Length: 129
Image (tube, rainbow, N blue to C red; front, side, top):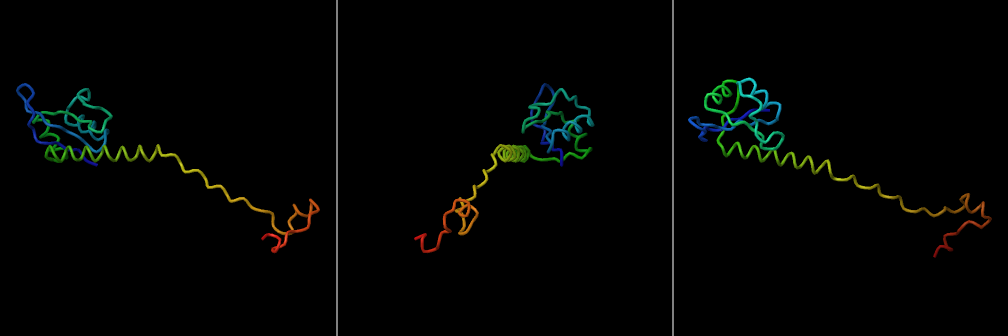
């Protein structure tokens, strides 16, 4: 499991911002707390593209703390892969179980208790034609 930061290219006031994403929400929040980013700044919380926009100084702290530097394209591809994995899991969980295959009906065997109880003679192979 990892935390990722892309290159800082998005202007916000006098700062340049970048994105910080992680493989899981708890990892993302732990890194944000570790580098001093308020959790209230999370964007798209609980969704497949959950992330923080962080400034260059926080990016440097994240990298020091173990975040992996990636391109913006790599970040998007990773987010899409997480979305696809989540959708596959949802599909798997929502697919109904296949119904049990019913057993084929069985005819009473020759000399079975049903024939004896009814008083009928047991069926013969030549009678089944």
